[in-house]
Image 1 (tube, rainbow, N blue to C red):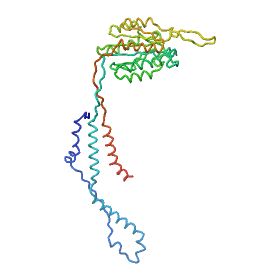
Image 2: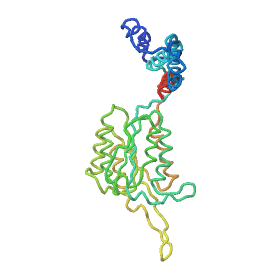
Image 3: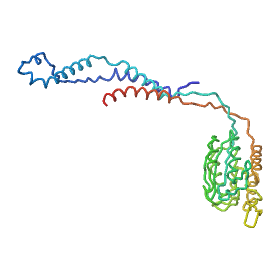
Image 4: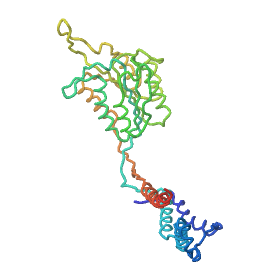
Length: 351
């Protein structure tokens, strides 16, 4: 359906006519003296021929200039310029009225839930103990891969993104634009927020951002592979504040339990998740009414996100939305084109 957002702007259409009839016309008076050659100037005697020949070309040019001046004065104003100017004005006013095209109505599920993702970017996330399609990848890469699929399924939820390391940063406030949240998650890099881990500050930042919103269901999904080594707020204290604000926290411990490393003395088995503080992560989830999950590989991490879909199901309420496409660009482009056609001949003559 076509609509005009600012129809009152169309009242400006007769403005050129009002200016034409109400304002006094400015009269241009140009007085020029032109010496018109007379027939007597060509009546020369035999003794004068040699003296006048060098000036005869000036007389011919003066006569031609007089003819051109008379021809130009007798010409009528160009009708096509007036029509083009009028058309350009109509298109300009039409563009200013902001024409729009409304698309078909789209049903969007509304859940009334605010969901915040907190992703660890500390230096330990460089550990490559995950596999995707047979290739060894680090923990952050695996987290991005699985979390991206989870974000794409969150239709109807308002999503937010917190990145934390030594400090916690709000990368994306709560929004329905899941594509932007996913893109900013994919652009995150290890060490962007510092090399250490501030779990308590990340929870505190989520409480601050979610507490300012309405009384919707509030959920925080916190993903980390270590222990709290930085920040001003302890994780347990932050979890207690989250419980008071009605914020449920689902914690995910990332990292494999066993990894084989090659050394000078052969192969050896190591635990790459030795620094993971599962006890604290489990206590955070228990205090806030959430759950703790352990992700040792990519498949287990994907199952955790599937389980989160079941724990936080989408309600059946929907809201209709009609996409709006602005059309003012086309009449504005035509206005610029017509204006250029009017100006170019004058610029060409001056050149």
